[in-house]
Length: 160
Image (cartoon, rainbow, N blue to C red):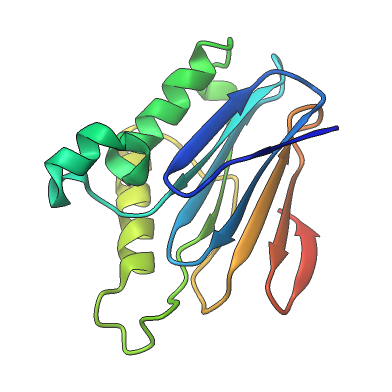
């Protein structure tokens, strides 16, 4: 088993059954996992902010940092591996309220709202999610099986 780490404002896609994609420290950031069980291809995106309009320069240099530019890249990259949108299983985690206990910025909620809006416009349904709260999460996507395990701080591991 090869562990492939997905950093912050990063994405990895694969059709290699020996790989497990993992992203750590999902606080207000959101992890989006997609998987097509027919071609056994999937990907994992870890985005930080809702909209690229916030900083056009950064969006051009780091499109995976933003929901509105990162999510389309995730889907398109999986399509290149033979994935088909209608078969894709979509799972989401993160969007916590970390370091913003007073809810001044609401980055986690804004990230989740941007993701839902984008999915709604593109007829994408979320198959499972674990969002909100005040916890950090780690996601692991097995390319061999499509299984997504989630580690939630203080709550242990579970399959999402």
